[in-house]
Image: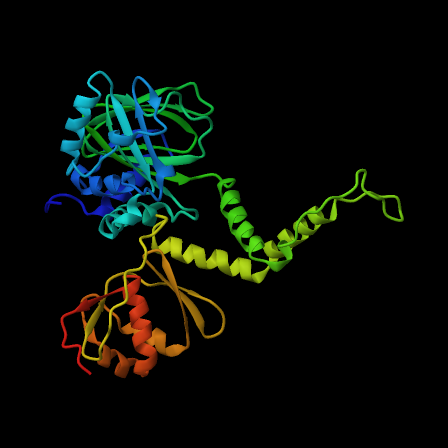
Length: 396
């Protein structure tokens, strides 16, 4: 960004005032990313064994989606996006193609953090998403994104063109208007919820798309998955449904109720939904999501390293804090949470600064926290990348 270009928060504020919740638009908005920076995570997502293979899609303009793209996916002989595109130009000389990967950012913390900071500027202007957002990276060449526009979409979308060109046809709900937007490298395509869309990837196109649920019904899937996990971990759910006669026996009053295994499951579901532990789990997951700007899954914590009293540390991420009962709190950073208790951890948190490195010994003295409690706390903060290590002697 040069000296004359507005900072990120100013650009997002202008964008929100002009476009948010309004009509689809193409806006010049360079994201500070290039195709080479995202290609590594695309290739890693396609490499066997593909842990998230369900998120990898490959299609050609003539054949549609291929169930097994095999050698058409990036491989060890494709060191960069240019080499990969050149190879496919020889393998598919008569057909365009599209490779897309959903939720790949967790593979590269640097890329994930860059995108998080990018979208955080918008969230600060319009509000933070309460549900996970979807990130998708795509490489395409003369290929439409799908055969037909999606029906009744309940999300809004932000699509940055990192290289090449693309067009998008849009059909907003409840209107007869059709939009066609065109974008080049450095442009941002935006459309609000309720727009069916049809992508067309043109010349050597690479995109980053962020899709955000915008309708209340989207919360149902999130809550249902959480309760299903809790139910399956509950011993009361372990029994088998069994075999029951039909028609089921009536009660003394002649009323026929639901089969007991089904009725019992409903009671368990209702009990867990109303339990304080479920409310807490939703609250803690929101703290993690806030610290990740909605980008899930977050990159995994990094390996633990030994910390000595002479080692200097500094804050490297915002520690988002929510109360968790008397004397307790949950800290969240980079999509991960940490439960703390007592006043000493809060004194440590208040002393951590990005611009003022402190030794572990100095933090212990200032917070009056003994080393046997402080070092595990700092180790956890380092693993979730809330602090960074700075040169120090590390000696006892």
